Image 1 (cartoon, rainbow, N blue to C red):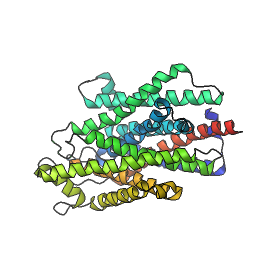
Image 2: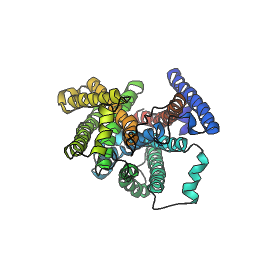
Image 3: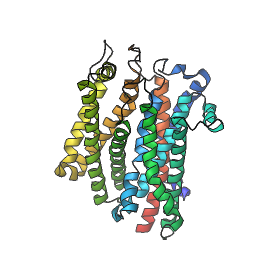
Length: 385
């Protein structure tokens, strides 16, 4: 079926060509990082996780969001999601691939990844993160490709695939939970030392992932003959309408706990992110932009009238995606490292090579999703013919 991705319109070839160009630029800067080391990034002794790990953290959530389609369709027999579940699974494949590439980029030398395999340490959360990420990638590849192949032949999915589908549900939750434990298990970092880290990660994932899927579904409808369905898009919009306010509520719980209990070390991180600290305020405009976009998106999503309007829904989804990206892709990591446990401030901002390598990895993910969606849409169009 992959041969279906080799042909397409001029617009499709231009899009793929553009992605390949961005990937080429990213690879070029990665070769420079490989030769010169992580010194070309903005990371330092005080900020040892930067833009790469921040993108990894955000994209794990996007990958995990596929479960919001799998649960209603396979466990509750919500047949309407049968048309778009494959889109969620293929989005998860692209997102998990990007997660793994961001980890490799953060390691500096990719050979270091072999240490996790050759010298496994089950008492390390990082070891389990590798297990769940690779396992989730395998499950989505297996389930997505098998069900699509069966659909192409006009047959129901084989029975042997169902245990893997059911297994993918807790597995999706586990990838973001284990990632949250990477942070919550560091007692020296007050910003991350919270029991609601995993629930907060999951709620932001279940907002950002379906929001991106809605945007992709609207794009598929506009560019192809396949219509993912109005009901399906509206149901996804309802999921985002529940998840995003819940994410803001958990953030408010964090703020209340830290400031009402007056924990000095924990307050400094929030002060740095939202008001600046001792003249260091690089992230302040970003964090307030995130809050404003999230609140605006909630207003549009919880109102059934605006949610049913697909133009406003698309705006709300775009605002949700950007707001959660800023929160997890910028603030979450820097806010945990700044200030350091000695209350000294070393600000972090990604350098140009770091940003271009990250952009190249995003382009690889976009290319994977483009190719997989091209195949899936071609099969759907074949069914319509």
